[in-house]
Amino acid sequence: MSDHLAARNSRIRLLPLPTSAPWTNPMEKVWLKLSRELLTQHPYGTRWQDLQAWITRWFDELREGSAALLHE
Image 1 (spheres, rainbow, N blue to C red):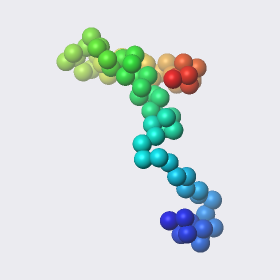
Image 2 (tube, rainbow, N blue to C red):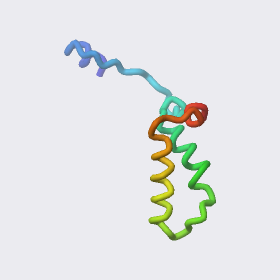
Image 3 (cartoon, helix red, strand yellow):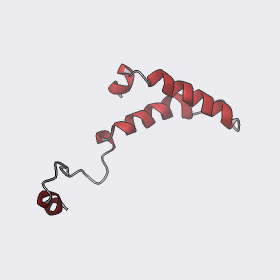
């Protein structure tokens, strides 16, 4: 694959990563924090729409950035 990209003078660089390296994926921090704060033992049981609204509000609070999330 690298040869193919080089032949096309591509600016794309492939970075080798370990098979499983969740700490290298910023989205993993979001899911970890979401799980810790909202999804573990939440009070909504079968009230799916209430849980959706709760999660939406949580994401809205993070829209402008979060030092706590970066610290995860």
